[in-house]
Image 1 (cartoon, rainbow, N blue to C red):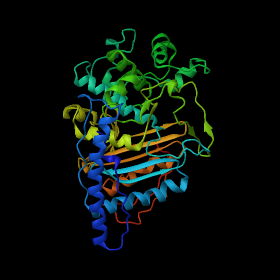
Image 2 (image 1 turned 120 degrees about the vertical axis):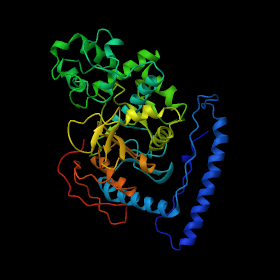
Image 3 (image 1 turned 90 degrees about the horizontal axis):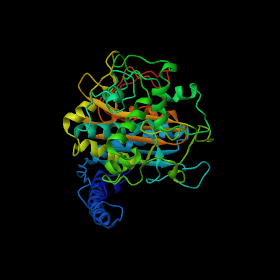
Image 4 (image 1 turned 180 degrees about the vertical axis):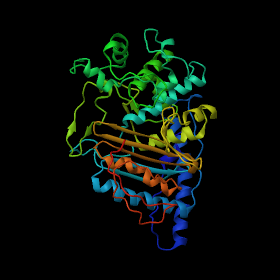
Length: 433
């Protein structure tokens, strides 16, 4: 069965005559239900659709009152026009409430210059947002009793001589390991040859004495891609299959995320490359075959399915999700923190924003979940655009998610429409993380 989100009703934010608008919304809602029913029948005929219990059927989206739908759509459209559009955004944006798409926008082409218009099926590189898939794959194995969060990596890789480095340390970036993005080159790696995940592990083992910036695990937060490279290897060892295939069989096929894949060289023809802010192609380099920390290609609609799946708690037990969303980086005061594969804002009220950003070459991505208000905001682009990381400003459309310590660059977004508890703040000069 195809997800209900495949049908959408784009109601204009300003409609003359409330009665007409309400009627239009009601018609769209009926069409949505009819489309979902039709999609179910079509899905059963799809040769690629699993016909057994491995298919994960998500709960139907819950209705959004017309006035709220129109307000949220207007807010999202205004943010897009004020923040992304002026920076020549090339990519896709989606905002959803209760599983319903309230705003969706595509702009540009997969190749620059090109004629391959970006659509709902155009997969783009989400960079570090990939870590959310790696983390949830590990947590699934923990839930199944195949791993223990506090198991040391040396239990599964005996030659890995880094005492105290646990699976939990890797997930929450408290392992104390150095970043392979730098040390592989420092150790003289031949940059004409692609690095594989196993190469990273081998260098950590065989050339440990030459590595710098190794610290005692568990002492502090240090965002490090090496952690997720090792977690991908752990998944492969436990599952006895490749990481791309495990992700495909465990999440992508059952959820019918048909436009998504983990990149391998076999995907070269269908993978859209990225571009700098001028539109100049950024070619692949020796780091581009490493996965787990990056290399997932997907769409905003497929990420909406991912959000709906995680919000449904249909596969993961609540205690597992609670651990994923528990803040582990508490040595500095503030609302920013990191869980097990997820960044987060933790507010004094108890509310949280659960998210992850991504940045690789010219690709930018932001996957921002607002669970207390059943909302998600997703932006993916393949032409470098730092404005993608200002998407948190739009979270205030759903509630009071003001951040007095926002450290991203100043945005051109101005609140000229009524949102919810929006407060003004002075733009900062610091770079986005």
